[in-house]
Amino acid sequence: METFLSGLQILAQWEVFVALAIGSIGGVIIGALPGVGPAVAIAILLPATFAFEPIVGLTLLLGIYGSSMYGGAIPAILINTPGTPVNALTTYDGYPMTKRKEGHRALSLAYSASFFGGIFSVVCLIVLSPLLALIAPHFGSREIFLAAFMGILLVVVAHRGQTFAAGMLACFGIFLNTVGLEPVKYTKRFTFDQSWLSSGFDLIVVVLGLFALSQAFLLLIEKDHAPGEAHVQGNMLSGMKELLGMKRIATVSSSLGVLMGMIPGVGEFTAQFLSYTYAQKTSKTPDTFGNGSPEGLVASEAANNAVPGAAMIPLLALGIPGEALTAMMLSVFYVHNVIPGPQLFETQLDFVMALYLSLMLLNVIVLVFLLFSTNLLLKIIQIPTRFLGMMILTLSFIGVYSLRNSITDCAIAAGFGVFGLILKRLNLPIVPIILGMVLGGIMEVKLRAAMAAVKTPIDFISRPIAAIIFVMIIGILVLHIRTLIREQKAKRKPDPVGPDYEHSSQQG
Image (cartoon, rainbow, N blue to C red; front, side, top):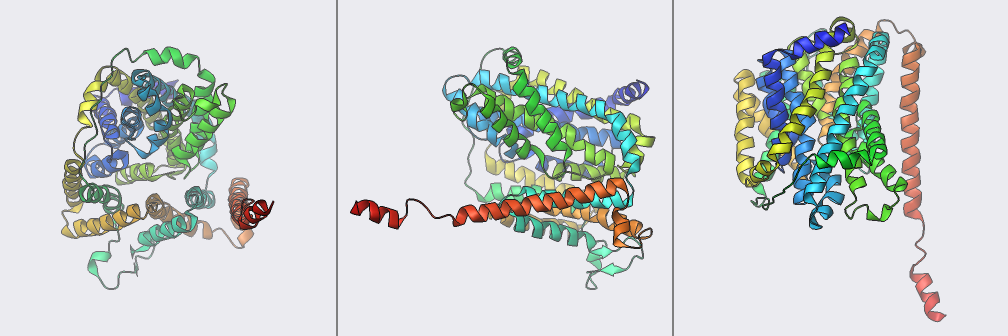
């Protein structure tokens, strides 16, 4: 109770509350703008947050992260264009409901399910906090190294059909982290006697290039368009009453969101897929899924909004980000010399509690805002895409230059922007590069520290937690190889309706 009150006291500071309100409302607007997304907004804002206190900067970024999916549901439901990639599944049932003149009902359900998922995940976090505080101190260098390695492995395996590409890009991210002065003896690595490479590749410069500038280039080279006009009328709270009739689906979907959010590299898409599949298989009307099913809409929105809160668990407890947005937040911790990990729960549990409470409060702020501002947001999303692209481009270069007043950083960011654009056009993932950079740095530091106490390879997994993580890594590899073998066998199976079959049927 004392920790809870201390966290509430931190959150009561006017700077923290203002940052949370701006982040929450701004996140909804950004999420509602197709083609922007929270990753771009957080990348642009990162340099500015370094000037704030850590709790102020983090609540601003958390506001954007946790609220963007609320906004992304609006264009997904009304104009069949997801505001963020995570809201793609929302179009399956949201837009068919709009075509049936039930747009207001769909939006109300989406807001209610998102609110339920968000609050559910924060309650789970607060309940789990004492357990995390007990477990986290048992993670030493070996355990954190293995956990970081498992995070990279999960990110790679999660990209089904693109495993090799994701693995190569994760390795590229690890390589980028090694460029410059190494952290122990300060010898130069991969600098080729170029002074501008001595300080290595700054994570923020790479993030702004790969996410923000690449998106700006994409919007500028594509055909200019603006989403069509839409309008909704009615009480947005009506979905709360309807959600009570689907509380089983909402609870299970939120639970899956929490579970998937805690696992590094898995995230919203897996949570949505599992919850949507569960809802369809247990529904009395499975045929309506994909054709305007309220249950499908609730499953999708409850699951994706439960993930942001749960994604903070590996970040805060172990200092291991699960995806790109939490990797960006990690840089804010490091700039202010607040190191996430086991010691954070021992020494600054009130700080952790303040972050949890800010996640809960942002859901309340967003819901109140959306109850009165949905039609205003529908006007905002009609901004032409090339104008958005130019805005992102300008703000990105301002952000990069403000880091160190360096034109070289701008040139590096532009280079990564072009590289990110190529990856997007080839439909290849960008996230493994960022996680490779962040987790690669963690792995190097922890491996060096662990090797001082390791004499044989078995010593590395001699402790219980290290052994458990090692077994999990082997299990992930075995399951993935098994899945690949099954897919190959399925491809090799002869088609029963082949030429021979057709020929014999014609003779018959």
